[in-house]
Length: 169
Image (cartoon, rainbow, N blue to C red):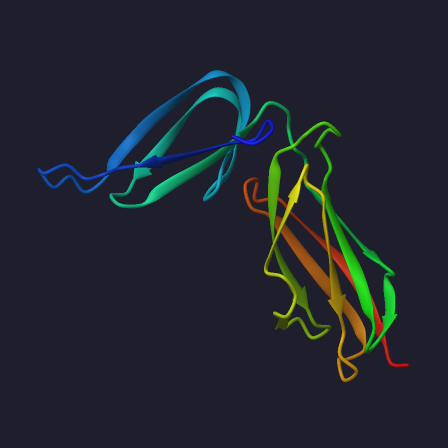
C-alpha cells in the first residue's frame, strides 16, 4: 500500500495432489473500491470480485483505489520540434487528487510517423501522485512528420496517445 493505492497478488501454490488450476476464487474487500485486474482490466466499483482461474505458480495482481484514478493524460512541450531537438513529456492521472501519494507506473512507447516503434525513451516511468516527466530527444536524421507517444498506466490498463510534430530545420 502506498497512498490510497493497494496492490494485491493472489498466488496459487499447487498442492501435492497435482491440481492444475483453481477456478472461481472470490475476493472480498472490507469496503467498495475501484478494482483493476492487471491482466484483464477494470473489474468494477465493488466490495467483492471473482477470479475465474488461478494458474499454479503464476501471481495474479489487482490494484484497488477508493476513488476512480481516471486515465493517463500526457502533454508534450513543445508539441512541435526540429529534428535534433528535445521535448519534455509530462504524464498525470485525470482522477488523482492533489493529496495522493501513491506511485503510478506508466508503460511508454514512441511511434515514428510510419507506425514503427522507436524504443529509446524510458519504457517505464514512475511518479508519486501520478505525476512524471521525462525528456525525449530526436536525432538529426529522424524522419519528419507526426510521432506518437503512447502511454499506458500499468495498474488500470488505461492509455492515451499524444502527438509530436518533428520538422527538419
